[in-house]
Amino acid sequence: MLDTFESVPETIKLSNTMSGFWGSLFLRMFRVYKFFVHFLSGKSEIERICLSANGRHTPEITLQLEQAFRRSKQLQYGSFPNLHTHLLSMPPHTDPEHMFDLIVASKKIPKHSRHFDTFRGVLLASLNQMRDVSRLVAQLDEARQPYESKNPEHEQLLMRLWNLLRPNVRLSQRISNEWGEIGFQGNDPATDFRGSGWLGLDQLVQFSADYPQESKRILNDSVSHPNWFSYAITSINMTMDAYMMLKRRELNAFFYQYGPTLSSFYRLQALMFVRFNQAWSDDDPENVMAFKRIHDPFIENIKRDSRLGQLRPLH
Image 1 (cartoon, rainbow, N blue to C red):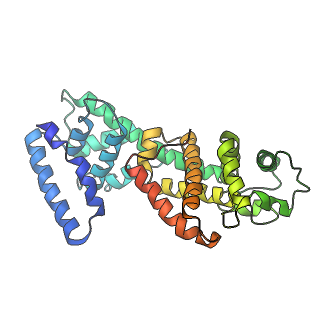
Image 2: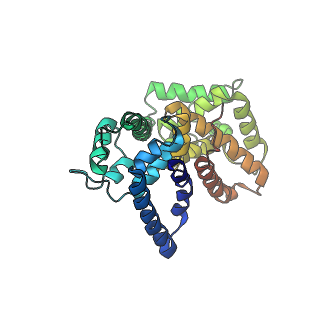
Image 3: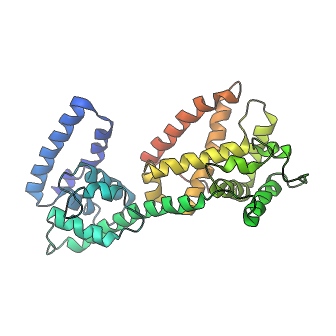
């Protein structure tokens, strides 16, 4: 019987796209459904989700639990009157064990159940994933430290970027219009890192070093076609796009599948840069003024592919 009940959570995602009268009606009907399922099975929705894969934890379970947390009106306990909100945006220092205890107390889940240990293991795995997304955001916030021209490490990294992209060309001087050859806007690249900070530069360097063929192709496109975007500036834009989507929890499905790590984030940015170049090529716009027209639907497609489990990092 529980197998029948568990076919429903996938369809519940439709509720996110509903609004107004029909969305309200759907949620009311679903709460009635939950009441009867809880009555018949003796288990809360959170328990049923955790036990749906025979004790195995999967990224899909974490996503289903997020949906359950959003819908639950009973997730409140003591100093956490809005426990569901805290669970969906856990601070990096959160202890998942403590959150687990609060959920058990809030939902009155019996600890003597023969499935309790299995339930505990799966739920803790999901809570750790959710907390680790917040930790990744904190890591990226730290990496977005301002670019400092007086910092030797920052300057060395910038020169490494030049040498990777223009290996046979000597830069005449640090402040030079030659930086425009690799896609910076002015004579001093430092001004282009105001939003992304050191992170934007590091991702430029890592992409150029780890994916030399893709990097060369995109750079060649940008300098050989007058209607193309700028290499460096667009990479920085992709960095900030990925960061903002992560911060808004719009890419959780991707990071639950591949791990909420810096490595996954860097590989995601690389994928986005390559795909954006392809999107630009497919559109073949008249000039760079088409950037927003191409960029905005591209970002929506990235979000969609993440939700559908079709977003795979560049290898």
